[in-house]
Length: 314
Ligand code: UDP
Ligand code: MG
Image 1 (cartoon, rainbow, N blue to C red):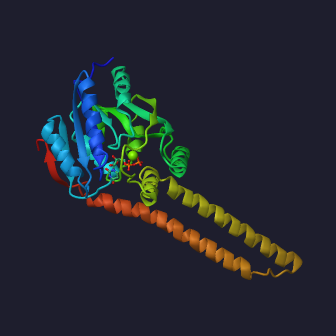
Image 2: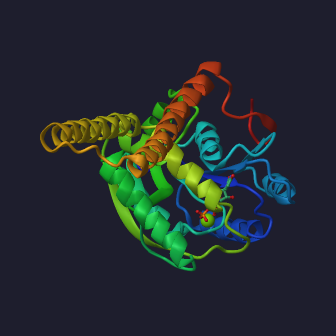
Image 3: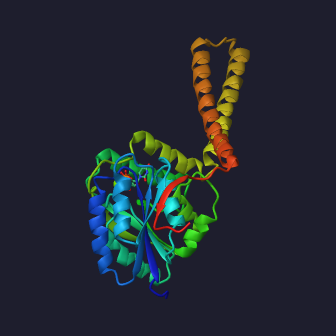
């Protein structure tokens, strides 16, 4: 058994959420008044170009428990969450979305689990309300494919909404990598983990910031940042194609030798050249992705640049 956290942190990434921030502020303020222990709220403005930062400034000026980091530009959701985590001081930290899709009333249950000794309590989406069928389908497929091929321990249908203990936050702090797939990193950490089922609400207001190209980039990052498997698949695929080619050569030679056949080859050649040429380029592209990641990591640039902080001592 662990004691109740002396300080519980909430951290939320915010990107162009001026429509949902008033709802968020009202809900969190209400919720804080019901919590029996000390809390802080760390909001990361991920380079919003609308009025979000002004709303955050007002909120932080009115409530000293609210702390804000504002990025110099949009660095992306995962980096914003990581920055938020780095600035938390609580014994336990809960990651939430700013659009209230993750219900605050699940948090006390997460804290109860934390008290019984779990280091990670992730929310598992039992149902998603107000999301299009293609978003639901692609999300469903994403978790199944990732679990089958890349992240065996990745829990299905769990997003970033979760409670993590201080030692997990410290573990994350010690990771220098720039390509973050937080769910995978948390799964990799081990410790004791458990799930709480919840119903994902529709967005309180505004639009999703994940369009299709961002979703594809997110999935590619999840696959590539964690595993040499895509590159291994290339080798297996290459060996398979080579075997087919070899067998076909053997077969053609045998036909020529025994039956005197010269094989009509034009379509075969064209098909082979185009398919293999195409596959070669795809494979080189995948290898190139890895190399570009090595290049990015080798530069050792900071993950993000901060423009402004509020209620945070440097
Ligand atoms: N977000 C962010 N940076 C981005 C995109 C999104 O900080 O580049 C934030 C966004 O404000 C929200 C959370 O990440 O709080 C999840 O984004 P969104 O709701 O658009 O994703 P969805 O729930 O549709 O998957
Ligand atoms: Mg959302």
